[in-house]
Amino acid sequence: MPEVHPGQHKYRHSERIPRELGSDAAMRGDALAVGAAGTAVRTTGDNGFLGVLGEATQADLEAGNLGPGVDEAIPVESGDTAAVAIQGVVRAKVSAFDSGTGGTVSDGDAIEAGAAGALTNIEAGTTGAAVEAGVGEPKAMSNEDADGFALVFLG
Image (cartoon, rainbow, N blue to C red; front, side, top):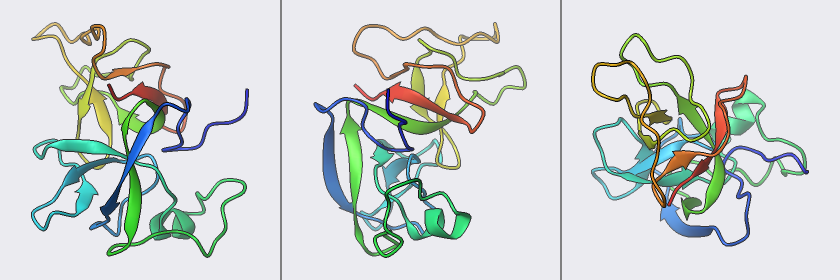
């Protein structure tokens, strides 16, 4: 199986939309929301989830995260139009829920917009366990890897 890079679609039926990028810190694979100016910004967990950034950015270039086959002249930056994955399975930045008992994101966990551009699993009340996603709901399709990414079904 070929390597899947952050924000890259795993299956061809995935859908992307163009959206102006409004965040200089956003990297491919980050969760995005619609900011106050209508541009795509990294989610804070309090703003509505839009999708996952599907292209390399200037921040990726500066961090050395372009991946193989990505031209250094191509990365988008704030003010440019970027591709945002809104449906299907993508490799996205994830982190465990922040209750002090989180752990990591695991296959089957229900996923929601979290802070700092990551998607998080949903905690089941006070048990400290993650909620298992239902059919058609956003969920992790693989365990979180050592780089903090997982394959995620966006719905």
